Amino acid sequence: MRLSGLAFYRPYAAMFAGIFFCLLGVGASLATLPFYVLQELDGNKVEVGVVTAAIAVAAVVSRPIAGRIADRHGYKPIMLCGAGICVLAGAAYYAAFDVPLLVAVRILHGVGEGTVYTSGAAWLVRLCPVERRGRVVGLYGTSMWLGITLGAFFGTVAMRVSGFGAVWGLCVVVGALGLLVVSVRRPPPRTEVTPTTRAAILPVSTVLPGIALSLAALGYAALAAFVALHMEARGVDDGIAALNAFGVTYVGVRLFIGGLPDRLGARQVAFWSALIEAVGLLIVAVAHDLVTVIAGGLIMGAGLSLLFPALALLVMNRTDPSQQGAALGGFTSFWDVGLAVGGPFSGVVANLAGYPSVYWVMLACAVASALLSWATNPARRPAAVSP
Image (cartoon, rainbow, N blue to C red):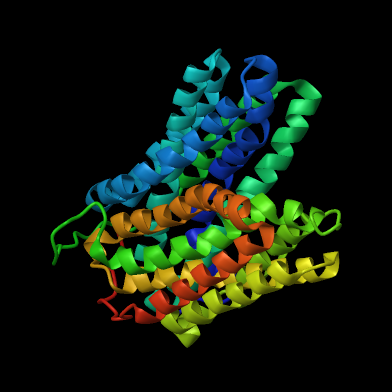
């Protein structure tokens, strides 16, 4: 019997909740550590940047490795390990009395985050019917996004009310909740999957969709880093509202029409999603008032919202079932690379040619992302078996 409505999502609730709780801790630390470095450790702005980036670098490296290990040893135990590492990282913040120690803790936290995300995503793919994969992966990403966003809010409140110790305690508690919800989910009996291709840390199926994802991520990085300055240069205050608008449509589109990649085809949705992002970037580039730049942010959010699950679906359909954990981990790392490169790259463009040029360059990158998405062969592999 095929389940429908909310009953369909019940088998995946533990993975959704697990990533949500673990990312709450990531968001809480992300929002408060700059203040901790400057106020408690007497650090400087460069050290703030290093501490902030350390978790992302660790996640980029750990995701494909964790995915490959999970492919071999099962997704639930590796997701539990990742959640446990998040708990340990939360406790280790209490002992981070200088910047080098804090960087080490951030690396540990990044390994936990990357391991939780990748093993959980691969577990979902293994359980989910092929025709609903895009929808389920999209909702998994929404759980991650909400975890980071709410974690930043709760972390800031905890810092202001009770200090940094309360933030670290929050990281421990939410990590433990993630560990708990994953532990109670009992997977079906594991069926061995025989590899038909040689195992790899980065399967070849991830490369074209991954590059397309990185190119699209550059636009989001540019919006986050420079939209406020771009509008301020044109005499408009509160330009950061465009980034808030981005978040509204990013989540809303996933929730209400997140099944489009499954229904219309992953390649088609990825192609048009990247072009929609390009339209949003065009509007941001020419905006001279708040309403216009907010419209650009809304359109960008609508495009990028479905681009990730559509490209992920292309990756999954092109990857042997025995390597899907490694493939998803490697593919997601391309997003982080795009974000890491996007900020500095946008800064170089802004210095050379001004803020509007940033968005014209990113528009070209979004168009390139669309072309790469269309060039990706959407060949479908056989359906995966349950772990």
